[in-house]
Structures are given as C-alpha cells and as structure tokens.
Image 1 (tube, rainbow, N blue to C red):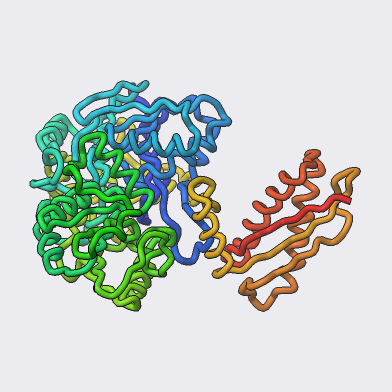
Image 2 (cartoon, rainbow, N blue to C red):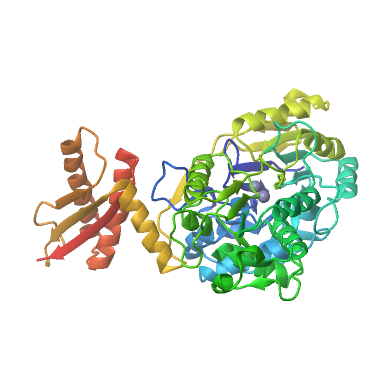
Length: 556
Ligand SMILES: [Zn+2]
Ligand SMILES: [Zn+2]
C-alpha cells in the first residue's frame, strides 16, 4: 500500500522568481530549487526576496536533500540565506546538482561562511537514491550550461520537474536536450509533469542560441567606438559568443561586474567558456586600449541598481566613463517587473550620447525558455498523467494548461496551482490539499560584498525614503524605558495621519523594550538591532516605505 505524495510549491507560481518546491513522501522531504526574486520598484531598500520556507522549520532531519536544477538566481540564489537560517536547528541537508551549478553554489556558500554544507556534483544521466526517492538528472538546454530536469520516482510513480528549458537543436555548448530519455520516461509512465511556463504565450519555437553569434558579429562590425554588451552574468553562452565575435573583429574583451567575473571564472575552470590566449583585458587596462579595439561585457541588463552598467549610465563607475561614440548593446530582455529600471538606464545612456542597440533592433538575444511548440513537445514526449504548470505568472500557468489540453490531456488532470497550495497524489488520484503558508521573506541589507555596495544602498534608501532616528532612554537598573523616545524624521514621505503614526511608533518602541527587559537583554547593540528590525517592519507595514532606521539606545 503506497502512501501519499505531496508536491508543495513555495514560490515561482503566479510570479517570476523564487522557485522552490518541497516534495514529501512517507514523511520524508526533498527540496527542488531554492531561488530568490529581485525586489520590484516599490520594495525600495529591500535587496532580495526569498520564498517563505516556514514549512521546513523543525523538519531539518526529514530533508533528504536539496536538488538544484541550474545556477540561475531564481533557482539557486536563496540557498545560502535559507541554510543560514536553518543551521541553528541542526545538521544541514546535502545539496545536489550538476557540476557548474554546484560550483556556483559552493561559491555562494563560501561567501556566507557555510563551509560545513555537503555539496555534491551529480552529472546529467546519473541517479541518486535518497530515502524513498529515486532521483535522476536529465540534460536540458537553457541560457546557462549544465541545465538539468529532475525526475523523482517513488512507489506512486515519477514526477518530472523540467526546470527551465528550451529545445535548442544547435546549442552553443554541449549536446541538445536528452529527448530520448524524456521519451523513454514517457513510455515508462510519468505521473506528474511540473513544467516551465515562462513562454507559454509565444507561438512557435524559440530561436536557437547559435543564431545570435552572427548577429552580434554584424552589429560589432558596424561600430566604430567602444562597445559595451550587457547580458545576464550567468549567460555563459552569450559571453562565449561575444568573445568569439570579438576575435573576428579584432577587439579585446573586458568583463565588468563582480558576478560577471565570478561566473566567467567558474565556467572557464569547468571548460564551459573557451577563452583564446591574450583576448581578455583587466578592467583597469581599459583606458590603455584604443576605443575601436575594445568590447566591455557588463552586468546590468536588468537595470539593477548596483550593477556596472547602471553605474556607468549614471557616470558613477570607477573604471569606465561612457561618452559619445560608445555603443551599448542589450543582449537580454527585461524580466517582467524590470522594464522601468531598464528604460531608465537606456535613457541615461542616450543622455550621455551613447548609441543603444536592443534585442528589438537586432536579434542579439534569444530566450532560454521554450515557446508553445516546445512546451507541447515536452508534453508529447513525456505523456504525463497529470500536469502542473510551474514557473510563470498566473496568465502563463493558465496558457500552459491550455497547451496541455490541446495535446489531449483531460482538463481534470491539469492542476493550475499557486504558491503554498500542495498537490496531493495517492492511489486514488490527484487533488489539491490544504494550503500552507507561502509568502515572501525580505532580505534587507547587503551583509556581504563591497563596502561600496553598502554605501550605495544607504544612499539609495536615503534618497528614496529618507531616514528616521529613534533615541530610546533606558534605565541602567532594569532596562526599562525611562523617558518617551525621541523620534526624528527627515525626508520620509508622510501620509496625512503623521501624528498618529508617531504615537504608534512610540508604542512599537515600548513593546520592543518591554520584551527585551523581560528576556533580560541589556546589551546596547542587541537592543539597537531589535529596535531596528521591529521598527523597519512596522514602518514598512504602515507606509510601504523603507526609510533608513537608526535606533540609538542610551542608558541612564
Ligand atoms: Zn527560472
Ligand atoms: Zn533559468
């Protein structure tokens, strides 16, 4: 008698980003992906958004492993934050994934001083036995090397998580997706397909990455001055195509941006990036070369506030001053939600006098996600009994469901879910279970990285939302508040009910201080950080703003 299988998405459904899914069978857990989401424009002061992983609390011992499909931030980025949080509860579970993905994971975990975590390389085609789960990694193609789909088999059958994919017939690196294995799985019987819905609204097949190179070359040939190409830092294929084209037009290549350089180094060491001798320049050498001999590959294709391109566009980059005659090429399209920041960056570039080339001017970008016909191909190859669209906003999940209907899957077997809603399957069939908590966790503060990053973040917070300083006076004897807290605001965009709000903030401070006094917390820095966290949350809740909060605790 088999038990119940539960597929619980914590993120990635009804949104773009923070993909994370918990699979449960016989009280054992498997986590697929652990991604983050970048904040939208109205979450000023927030650096990252994580899935709410509350369901894992107290269950560390039940987790057989965390498997990551690929190295993109929306699948891997939350891993260090989640592990940092859970480490106090016991021994952390092992992490599995393809070699490039795991190299990127190790680098992230190192930055967070999480060296004790067991990170294991598993190549596509290999299998893993973890408790009641048999796991197989299947090679797929996407906009990063070492992309794998994950087949999880229990007594009840096989659940196939496609991860992000396209069926690229002529990939730049490695073979096409392992369609033979997908078809074989289909013949053996796939119980549930959890598939990428990103481009469920685009008809036809996505263009191949190999088609981009010639267009880049053509675009480069038309430039006289410096060329800046911006793309995702993890898009190793694109960086490779830029390097290849650069060689043909006799230009040197400099990589700008911490993540760009880091990913290129990792990819190079694993043989995914082929760099001819002598073609690379260090950023500090840029000024030593004539304009017509240079290509700069930069982060910032999404208009990210701290990225190299954004800083160049605002004349705030330590090594590169953009000027008239330079051409900036966007070899990426904005992820939904980032359009405004990208347009702003582009307009700044025009203001400087740069020429701007985007993927709508010339085909220098191909999506890493399959279009309608590719989603249908996946459905036809794997012939799943149930379909659960993943990775997309509600509209794309719906459209993915329609595609499944179009290839003959009964509407009753198509489960359009949402974050926190588990699909439960037993011998009688599949149905949605009771919703679990699934929301967002904000990471406020760049704890790692350059001091310059922190300074920039502070400036950004101050300019957008102002600052408020709170001075609390407590008694040396018992830690109790002995005077009304002083609350000073500067530049905080206030609604009408400001006075009432100040009163409420005072009450919030009192509550924190009382809690601290009860727990006998007397260290000033601990008190200040408690006040900071409580007040920041309180003010965000009330104003939907993130002013900088500076609590000062004075003992008398
Ligand atoms: Zn993704
Ligand atoms: Zn991806």
